[in-house]
Image (cartoon, rainbow, N blue to C red; front, top):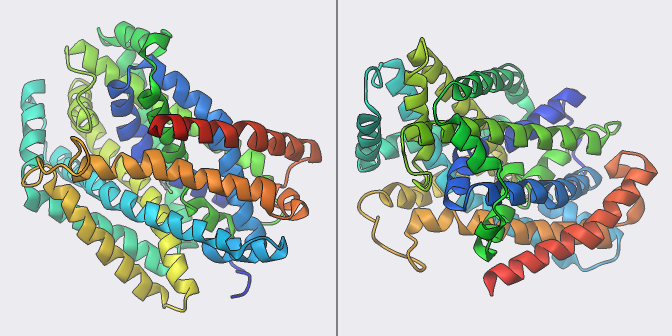
Amino acid sequence: MNETLERWQSRRAFILAVTGAAVGLGNIWRFPYMTGENGGSAFLLLYIVFVLLLGLPMMMAEIMIGRAGRRSPMQALAYLAAEASVSPRWRWVGLFGAVTVFFILSFYSVVSGWSIEYLVDAVNGSFVDRSPQQIGASFDAFLADPLRMTFNHTLFMLLTMSVVAAGVANGLEKLNNVMMPLLYLILLVLGGYAVTTAGFGEAMRWLFTPNLAAIDWSVVLNAMGHAFFTLAVGACALMAYGAYMPDDQSLPRAVFAVALLDIAVALLSGIAIFSVVFTHGMDPTEGPGLMFVTLPIAFSELPGGQVWLGAFFLLLLVATWTSSINLAEPMVAMLVAAGWRRGRAAALVGALVWGVGLLSVLSFSTLAEVHWIGEMNFFALVSTIPPDIFLPVGGLLIAIFAAWRMPVEAAASAFGGSPAGFRLWQILVRFVSIPLTAVVLLSGLL
Ligand code: PFF
């Protein structure tokens, strides 16, 4: 198949699309509860180090392959492997990415569905004058209701796949343009509110006082996985977006901005959420429900809280929507490359992901106690193994290909920065990112 001629409409459009992929549940939902479950500041520190040393250089590697290959991920890899006269088997990294995003999207859609439920609840005023206990209890009741969860999961999958069916670049950019800055604004307001709460000081201490004693291999492995997850790296999903990147844009500058923004969003939501946790004597290790219980409490204490809450869930929904579109893209691109019509490919992928997602829905009720590995039920399994293991493995392979296998001239021109910058990237990926990821993966698994 030939090179794609499609391009993002502007430089800004590419940055917005990558930001849209990066900022999502990972920052606002997963980061706080993972931090809570993994010892607070220890996790935070490792996460930031991994974003800068692994996530960022590997994000560049992944986008470079897409940009140099200008094809869907599997084909871009096959094309560049042929150019470099290395094994055509590198293309299987693209398939592995598709498997990874398949499982991630299956639970991502279920949790995004929770935002739909909460958006409707906020608009209906369901949280007005509720105590923190009542808010917690209504979340538990929602989780125990598979029909309501399935309804929201279905709606979210339809939202996602209808955009993917139409072709990624259309429309999405415009939506991003307006909605993302509003989300950051609301998070800033939340951060401002957090400062006024009684638990703010304790939250800041808990997040920022170094606590190296809390670090063990599972914390390291989880922090590394989260760095990949939050930046959307390791599943060839950004590779698919790189294929549409304009020729004259500098990659390092674009992705650096995205990574900083991504960290900022996570920090702001972490500060807001843990201020509420400590103000109300709640448990930081509460797990996946953390955000859905704390934020309604926070907003109910703000003047005009219901309006803020509704706006927040609406914007969160847009943020998760743009991430899930990115998650779906590599699978659909793969089928399209194999000759499928885009609409059909989107329908098939959507239906399969939806079906597997039902297992996650039921993991909060009927299948809660069905354990697949150790203590993990299906939801725990898919929300842990693909992000924390598959993404780093994929990222590792992508980085090896970009730094050691693909033709250096093609890599340098896809990098798009200065020659010295490219050299720095090459040294960092070859001698820091690749070995460090391999060591953490092996040590965490053994
Ligand atoms: N980065 C997204 C988030 O933080 O919510 C999740 C994600 C998107 C992970 C795309 C992986 C991916 F390929």
